[in-house]
Image (cartoon, rainbow, N blue to C red; front, side, top):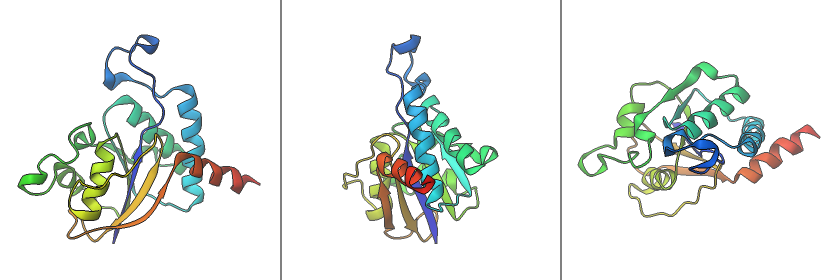
Length: 178
């Protein structure tokens, strides 16, 4: 069995803020980075061991992946997947397997984190669970869900193991310090 954790990037600067003129260059805000650091600690406290972290190439997603990687001491295990770029996660789904599974298939793992964007993550989660994009799964910024599948590409519906809002992950980190 393979566990796929899906995580939405953290809170990012708005276009125009701090001179940012391209969506791909929007960085995490200072508040977004602090919240993500706490969420990543919560994820680690849940004993969520990871083999790899895949991320979109957009700056806010890469920074999110890097923040999680630091918490897990996995800085060398981050891989950029072009299929995690907004609008591309399920490309090719009508004619076979989505491009994301082709890209992921060249790596070996049993538990992986994918850092991406909305609405792509909701559609990807729905696809993993049902084979369709019809479920509406909300991913707040920094939210994570875990889905178990039998293989990559998945053969049949996956199993939703859990879904955590960022506030819940931060609470786990806080509670474990006491």
